[in-house]
Length: 250
Image (cartoon, rainbow, N blue to C red; front, top):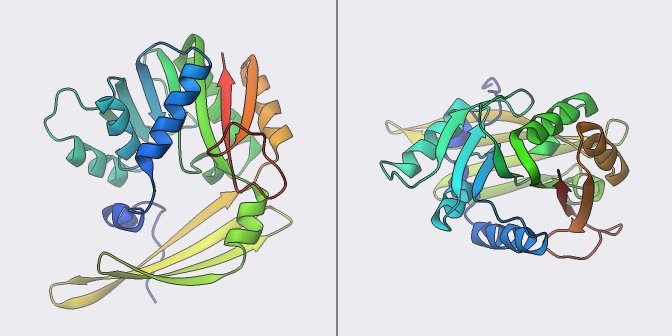
C-alpha cells in the first residue's frame, strides 16, 4: 500500500485540476465588496495559505500589491510557475501561517478556502490570528472563511466519493469524529507516469470551531471588531450554514 504523504505535497501538482469548479473570481469580488463596505482603502494585501496562488494573482490583476505565503513548498512552486516573469504579479514565499514575520505591514490579510480549519488546536488558530494581526497596519482588515461544524459533520461527514478530474481518478474517504470535531480525509488518486499507473495518498484533516470561539481568539489577538457572515452573503450564519466569512478589523 502507498504510504500517505504530507498534505499538499504531491497533491499540489493536481490541485488546480480538482478545484477547477471553484468560482475564485467570485470569491475575490466578494472580498472586494467587504473591503468597500468597511472602507478599507489600502492596496497592500497578504494572502495567507495562498495555495497555488489563484486568488493572490486575481487580486494582483485588480491592482493590489500582493504577497502570498503558504507552508507547502510544492504549492508555492505552483504559484511561482503561474506568476512567471510578470513583475506586477504577486510575490510568493514559503511561510507557516502560525509563525511568520515578513518585515512588512499590510492593509489587508486574507485566507481562503478553509485554510484556518487545517489548524487542529485553538492554540494554533490563536497563533495564526496573532501573526495576521501583527502583519496589519492600524485600521487594516483580516478576511477569512471557515468550514462550519455542519459542513464537516453533515456535508463531508463519514462518506466516500469517487471523482475524475482532468484525467486524474481519485477516491475521497472522509471520517468525522464528533468528539474532536475533526474530519479526516484520506485522499487517494492515480496518475499515468512512464506508461504506468502511480498511486498517491495524502491525509488531510480539518477541525470545526464555533463562532464564539473564533471571536474570542480574534479578540485575544487584538482585533477590535469582528463580523461573521454566511459565505458568500452579508447575512448572519444560521444552523445550516456550511461556510462562514469572517471580517476582523484592527
